[in-house]
Amino acid sequence: MTREGKPYRFDPGALCLELLTTGGPGAYARWEVLHEPADLVAWAGRSRLPGGLEPAVDQADVQRARALRDALFLLTADRAHGRPLRPDALEAVNAAAAEPSLVTRVEPDGARGWAPGATGVRLLSTVARDAIELFTGPYADRIRECGAHDCLLLFVDTSRPGRRRWCAMEHCGNREKARTHRARRAPDAR
Image (cartoon, rainbow, N blue to C red; front, side, top):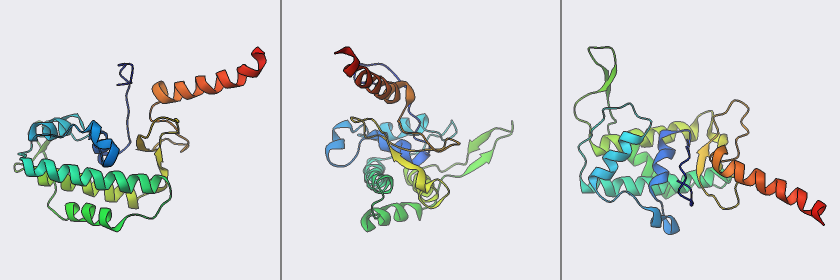
């Protein structure tokens, strides 16, 4: 939602980056939405993971999710701005990835489903492994921060030309283009 309450679609481009919209370290803690196990399960249901996932999650998993999210937030921001990656944040991601991950399976109707035993730890391992793929894969150099002057959303540019600048064109992109247009016309109005 925008500050005006208008909905817009923000696709950060990767599962691990979807977790960043749930809050964050420092000043971003004011947007915290992971308070109880149901919040983490709800996030998983809204994520790009296939539907039907209902992991068994407890309060310790919520704390682990927040810690992983904060580490991912710092790593993603560092990567977006060309800074060295923080060893403590890398350690947190690698530790989460070392746990067993979620297991998919083919259902009798041919659809994709989830093997029994989905837990919060497995969910977070899957997210951490996605982060490792992002930070070491072909899109590692396309991690960006929104180009709007007042937006700090992080995303990976998966567009073909690799020139995405905004979190969402219908939100920040349009506002920034309108601002630029007004600035260009301002001298003509005198």
